[in-house]
Length: 230
Image 1 (cartoon, one colour):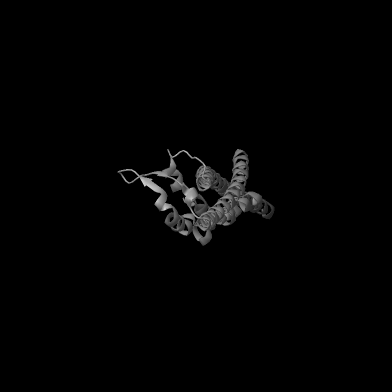
Image 2 (spheres, helix red, strand yellow):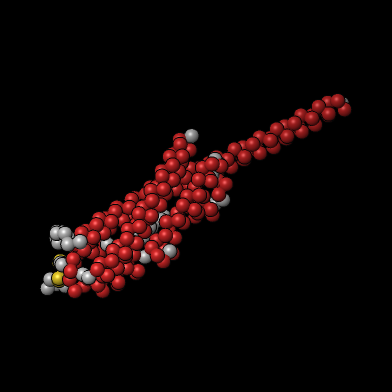
């Protein structure tokens, strides 16, 4: 009788033990499945966000390159060369324009709120953190915080004060031509050229940073795509 009871209790204990382990394993599997689903969702959101960021950065790159073209046109005017006046108002505007990046950080903020470690691959997690907390901050600081990078604020009033006597406007008050800048005296030309030199160098520096960040974004996007395929 004792032997039978021992076997009965052993069987019941083993059954309970197996049931508990199975329940634990099932719960753990379900948690991992939910975490993986959350990871895929956030990675997809980040991938979509950085695609939008790339478009915004490419627009800023294009804008800065057009501003460099405007710079070349005004150098020619100062040197007395003939320049088409058809779009002179546009070129004079973009000569000083600052291009502000609009970065979509909502997906990254969601990731931080849900715990960064939800990204299971360490290298990918570090790449995403680096992109948002380091590389994006570079271009944001250049465009928002560094005083010397403010083309309009720093240089438009100074240059405009010198060249406005040479401007012609139509009856609607729109700039239609800038003529005879070669008549500026030597010091005025040097002053304007010194400002243009500074603006050009700043734009080239920004373009270098944009190119670097886009390379990083494309790498992160590629790695996210590979992670989502697994």
